[in-house]
Image (cartoon, rainbow, N blue to C red; front, side, top):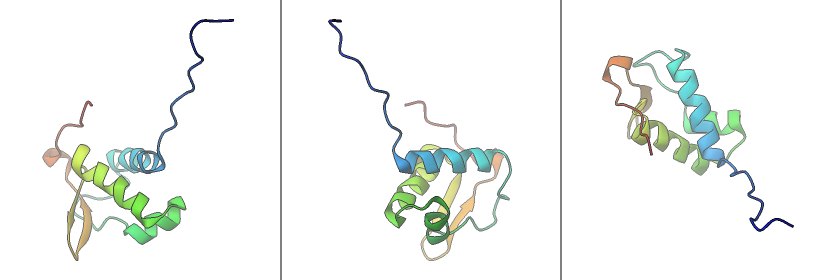
Length: 90
């Protein structure tokens, strides 16, 4: 028997899976800069996730990746590529 415990692969949280997929789509040009980004409810339906999970995914896109901006009551829009912050390396 081995002395080291078997390590299980870390499971990626659902909000991170959604954020990663959306980030890939934004970087690939699937959403036009300055245009309305899909709503939380539309994304919750698309990913079959709770609205709070999608809210967290949008937070990742906004805070960690600088890919979207959100205005209360107006929704989110894609930040133009030349105005994006560098991705976080944490």
